[in-house]
Image (cartoon, rainbow, N blue to C red):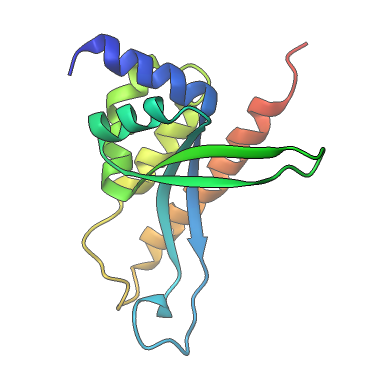
Length: 154
């Protein structure tokens, strides 16, 4: 892949993408993977132009979802395509585009720190307390970083 494609994807993601660390609370009554507290990385980018989303999928992997519905603010409708990446593939994408990010660089670094704690744990056993603490810290830091970005610069 050439650097121009990576830079283009970074620009798209910097403006239209979303980095999330998803937190799932523990369900002690569950017998399988939801029994313990979990954190995982998820990326999305939405556009109303399908070719851009398909290009991202073909170039970087992930999945594409289509959504449509009524807009809440008028009588119109919306259509959009969502590109979704999670866990290891999300981290691989962030590592590629990180040198080109301006707005979401700090969020990307936090997300990569979270992903560095991930092993092939199926969620059927509890993680060590120090790993859970790192993941919780990443979860809180990414939310705080997003709030700072939204404040106007005076």
